[in-house]
Each structure stands twice: as structure tokens, then as C-alpha cells.
Length: 507
Image (cartoon, rainbow, N blue to C red; front, side):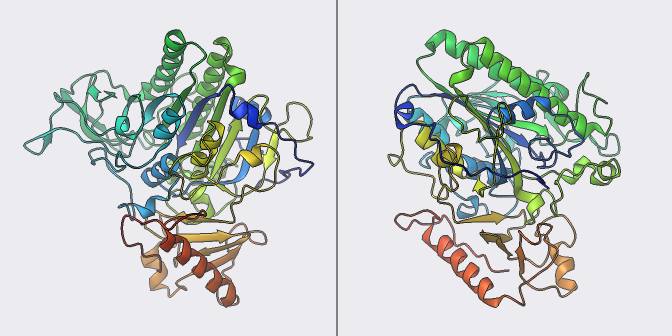
């Protein structure tokens, strides 16, 4: 559990100078894995049994955040939070996730990273898993695949997009290229859990050019093609922003040779190794194209590892996807939302004093909602844009500072349970996990467990000892803080803003 990882607080060396922010803007690539646990890669878990040399090299050349959190413990709300810098529970989504046929969630008026970066002079692209809804054409209550898709990532600031509507186990299985379906599906396909414990996916329409096992490498290749075509058309003077949300290691877990069986653990671990390999390919493309030193790359995950990874088998082999933390995907516990976050920007990231090539580790608490304000500053637009109501720039931390002004953080589970943390104190407004691990909320209620849980993460990182009955003053102060941030419509300084719905947070 990050033993030995300590942020070295020496004198701040500001490498991200104001003149560099207002000079040549860096290309930005934001890669988000799907259901990757904090214990699955070596930068955030030195005891990981999965070999991730390329991500380790990325960490060695940049900064690893050991206390980074997704705003939700499931897919859709985290993606909303990442792109808008705003907690998704402020939107119409109170719990759960969208499906592959859901209508678009983010209205075109809502500021996003796409709008932000385009406003800063960037070419913008979304390549990968969207899972924020778009509007299929319908005929007799069925999707009409002969018609274009409306209200996709293009209304959210992306000049170009190529992707799949939801998770890789959600039909329909077709590619959409900036509103145009690349090939109409003529058949249905699916694999049941009984047929393949790891590689299952729901039955639905699938086009011939959508090949489940090839989706992960295909999306990386599309991103490489985008980089090459952008440089050919625009040269190095116009920067690009690529949002690359991966479909892996989420189900279907389908590693291909030579990764299939390479981990010696199970297909999930093999799939993580394949992600690492493709990240290595990405860095090679940047180097070959001569843009490595002027490209900021961020790598993270949308939530903790899913139980589909087979925690029991992995535990028997000495590997814990949650890295020693309690819970997993869907939960309000740390394993649900504490995620890897690696940042690499050659020449601009404070590397501490650990020696050449060893990287830096930052222990400050950060959220993926902070990426919005970070890129606002990196693209020289600080305080010039709307959006990012729940984000704080991490540029000061990349500079070697100890704080980025974030004093608290709110987490949210698949069932709609809230948690608020201030310093080491975390208050979970749930009787149990708020998600899928035991005890689930109905069982916790039957057992008469307290309606809230208070933990001191410094003394109890495994969230085993509920201190709610012995610290009523702390409970009250955290509830008041949560109420304030909910009602103000933001957790950053500024004028009061409306939420999109009436938000209830008490259990």
C-alpha cells in the first residue's frame, strides 16, 4: 500500500514557468484505462505481480500521484467529471451508468475539455470508449444504422471522434466516425459468461469491421494515425489534444498473443500487460515523430478494478488489484475510486531528488476533476474559461509544491452513496460499501449497521474501524462541509451555481 512512496518536500523548483505556458503549447494526450486497479501497475504498487515496464518508465520520467481519485467508482459519472471538471452527481445521473443506447448526457452548452482545448488553439480528438451517450437515429423504436449519429463528442468540443458508444460489453458494436457509422451491422453476436468467464459480452448488433479482440490495439492505432495525419496537415506549430479512453481491462477481457498467458496469473493480468505494451508504442510514436519533449501525457483509470478480474484467484497468486485498500469498482471504499495517475511532460515535471530517472511521487490528494483546471493553466487560459467547478489545477504539484489548494474531496458510488474526505478523515454516508462488495446496502441495513461510517485513513487505510460514534464533532463538520459544497453547486471559490437536480446526500 505505497510503502516507501514518500513525496520529497524540498525547495520548490518551478519548471512550468509562466513563459512556457504562454509560449509553445504542448500537445496533450489523456489516456484513461477502464476498470484498472491502483494495485495493478508497479508505479502505484511496487508489489504488483503484473509487469508494466512502459508505465514504470513513464513514472520514472514524470510524476506518480499516490492519492488520486476518480470522482465516481463507475464509468459514466467519472467520464463526465473528467471532461467537465464537475461532479456528475450534480447532473441528471444520480446513480448507475448509461447503456450503449442512451441519449447524450453532456449538453453542448456545458464546458468540457474539448471546448477548453479547442478554445486554446488545439485540434481536438476523442478516440475510444465514450459512454456518455449519443443520439442514435430511431425507426420503429429501433436504431436505424443507415442514419448519422447526432449529439456525440462533436457537440462537446471535439473536432474529430472515433469510438464506441459504451463499455465493450454493451451493444451495439459499431464504430462511429464523427457522426458517421463506418459499417452497418447485419448480424447479432454475443458471448455468455458460461462460455467465457473473462471474455463475455452482451448479445447485440455487430458490424463486420468491429472485432472484439482487436478493439484495444485498433484504438491505439487510430490515435497513432491521428497524430501522424495532424502533423502532416498542420505541422508542429498547432498543438493537438487527444482524449483516449480505453475499453480495457474492462470486460470482455480479451488479451491477444503474445500477451495471452504472458502474466502467469490470468487473462485480466495479461490484458493489463497488453495495455502497458500499447503505451510503450505510444511513446515510441511521439519519439519517432519528434514531439516527445513537447507532449504532456496523462495516464489514469476511471475507477477501481472490477470483480470480473477474479480477485480470489489473483489473491491466491499474491496479487491485489486494489493494492491493499478496501473494496473495488462500484464501492465508496478506497478500492472503488483511488486510481493510478501518472503525468509525464519532459522538462516540465519536477522530479524530486531521488536521482536521475527515478521520477517523483506526490502524496497530495487529487481528483480527476482537477484535470480540467490543470489543462486550463497548461493551455494558458487560466481564469478565462467557465467550467471546472469541482477542480483545482495540479500544476503547482507538478512544480514540486505541496498543495494545489484542494482541501477536501467528494466520492460517489454506483448506488449513489456519498463520501467526503478532509485531510485524513473520510465520512461515508452509507451503511456498507454503497456498491458491490460486502456488505451491500440491503444486507448492511438488515444487520443494523450505522447509517454512516467515519474513518481515519492515516491510522486505518483499510477502512476497518468505524469511528462515527466516538467523533460526533468530526461527523458534524464533514456533513456541514458536504452540504455547503452540494448547495453552492461547486467546491471551488466563486459564485453560487445551480445543480441540474435536487441532490440528496443523506443515507
